[in-house]
Image (tube, rainbow, N blue to C red):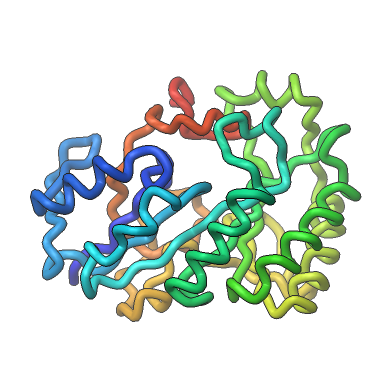
Amino acid sequence: MNPILSVSRRTDVPAFHADWFFRQLEQGWTRTPGGRFVSLKPEDVGGYVFWTKNPAPLLDRLDKLGNTPFYFQFTLTSYGRDVEPGIPSKGQVLVPLFQRLSRQLGRQRVVWRYDPVFFSPAYSFAYHCRWFGRLAQLLGPYTDTCTVSFLDWYPAMEKAMTALGAVRETEADRRALLEVFSAVARREGIRLVSCAEEGDFSDLGVLPGACVDPARLGLADPGRAKGQRPLCRCADSVDIGAYGSCRGGCAYCYARRGAF
């Protein structure tokens, strides 16, 4: 079975390394940071999952993927430049890009990520409820699924998050927020799923999701991903990105230089 390629959990390839990706595609192969040879010939790739906060550099070149199936995991949060300094304006740039990408590909091929959620004086429970609702109104016609997860506190970004006043939420906090989010998502025709979260939220209508989902690519299930968090439900894939190469500068990012 041909592998699913993840592009990439480790860096924002569409936003910052699109030229590199298409050079690899043209030569027909690439290598993972660990040195593994990966064929990019259409007959050798099961499908692509693109992870991004800004797909603009890819939009006019997606035809180069030919008939290989692909979809996007598009992260669009309500945080400001204090948290996401390298990310363009949400209202002026990213929401229109999300809508354009969905019109180009179809709403089932653009998954919205509101991820990760954290609480601070600036980003309170009420703040998240208000802005999730606003974004859901704008994106509902353009996606069928929203993935939500809460901040995992990795040592390399704990100092930055503490400086922002972020606090560790409780399970009661998570449940209360997901209850609100779930009601909003249903109203806008969006399925709400969680990403590798502890706790059972099925009574709220929130089930665990699989970010790398072979069904969304029209593929058979290759089995559970290796080397991911225990609660991750993603299918097995090969990631071709490199840690420390993203220029987004997000304060919460686990993949920043020095995070490992």
